Length: 201
Image 1: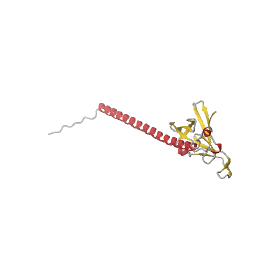
Image 2 (image 1 turned 45 degrees about the horizontal axis):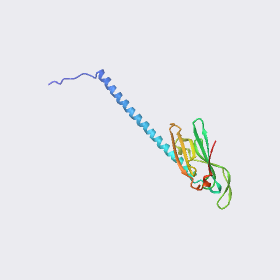
Image 3 (image 1 turned 45 degrees about the vertical axis):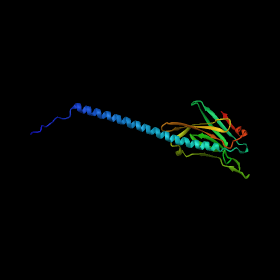
Image 4 (image 1 turned 90 degrees about the vertical axis):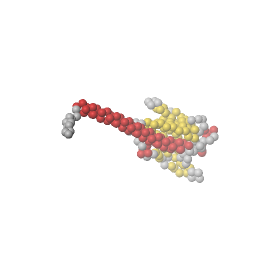
């Protein structure tokens, strides 16, 4: 028996259909991959933002919670309205656990604690001159974010403060806002509450 040979090639129509199908599958694959990449980027940015936000809130709330109330020390919250963005920028002046005068503020997008030069008296009555210094977290701890806004306000008429921090990623523009309330544990009486003051500039 002779086998019939089929010498026909691929027709132009078949090639066009094949390329069209390949193009459709490629477009679908690119769409899925792009969507996955975007989702992954958003989740990563959100995770980093939450980590940075919680770290900053831990520091601010920790310092304010332990603010010194001895010798008539108080907490002065200064706030000013930013007209362009309609945000309130706050700083807090208080005495830390060691009795050092401290100002908590945002400086060039970084959370900063400023300690002015002053005469310090320890518990045993000895005096010394403290050095002026600024404390801030290392930039790498911010993971590419910067603080764009911090608001500190009294949440009630007693010793509860609410801190709100907004951060923004310098590269992607991703923004994240977080807030937390803290209790100033050393301010317990009405006279103590009266020494927690808010000033609006």
